[in-house]
View 1 (cartoon, helix red, strand yellow):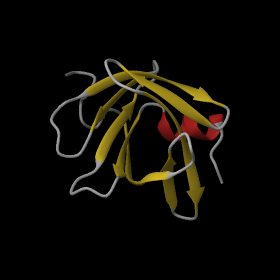
View 2: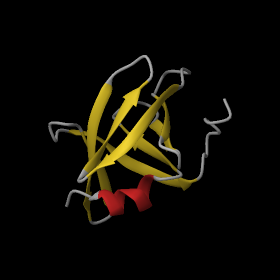
View 3: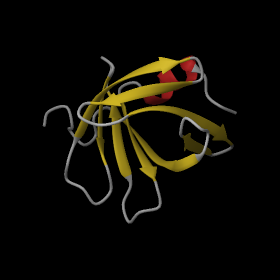
View 4: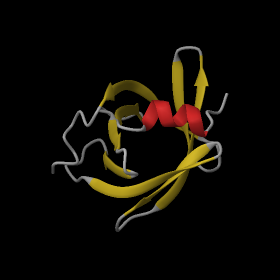
Length: 107
């Protein structure tokens, strides 16, 4: 089941999501309450900043100085899966932590 706007709002807004993308460590994304987003990819100390907004069944994010992308999150029992704009699986949520767990917004 692809999550819709209201479901995504509960899951994402103000939370840090850890996403297993098949590397040694997870990608980490914080979705701020003011539509600001922060991401650190595995193997990198660089912090990406961007702006995100909901769509009907997903969201889009535009990274400052980087790409823009459309995403959806699929849910099945016990599992949330990130899908890219073509609905290809790109990762699985391994952990959700309330707030800015990595203190990205303070960086």
